Picture 1 (cartoon, rainbow, N blue to C red):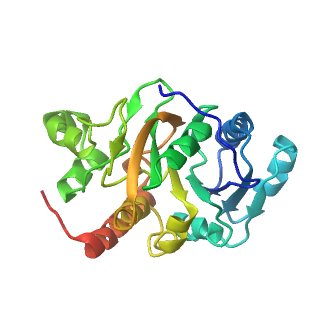
Picture 2 (tube, rainbow, N blue to C red):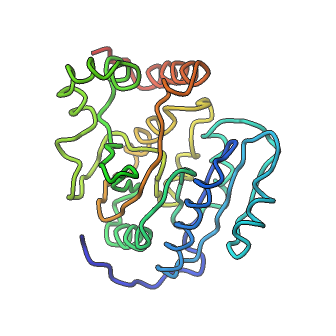
Length: 273
């Protein structure tokens, strides 16, 4: 892993936005604890915003009780407006660097320090994505090539024995041939679980497309970002990501997945196979 050089930081260099909905409290605490540790290790000034899409605001009370020494702003009361629209609450307050972070992500203590060093060393990079792992240590392949409908169906809904028959195709879709221990420039699509933007890039894009309620907003954002800046997969920045499969979450999630897929292909072009 590359070495880190300590660089001077602005008093408030970073803004962070975490969107929650009926949060898992233990997962959220792990996320915030790892975020706080990474900020402390790098001596990084940050504004942290939680936008809670739940019907009832339990987050404010919980934060005050569970992490009283971690200053966090909570916005709530607007209901479930979707991931993208909720993240856009952070647009006006976004700093020089802006992090979109899921509430099921834990980062290494040096992750933000390494990410900021990379961004400062590579001014052409406007969006950084990390190396992601499951809790058992297995690698997650969150970078993607442009998806065909067949890729989405196989990856999201096909039984294991069918996926095994198409493993070469799915490995290509998930960029398994490139994603490892070396920096990769310009992966077509990166995951919304951890997106570190330059603030001016995030603002120029006007944040996420609010038409997406859930799913594919990160696909859309990646393609729009690639039109104005360079994206980098940086394996020195490491996270553990919970994640989940839409097909295992019930009919509502499957419906949202299908609706968002239609919006995505209408905007960026249909590819069936």
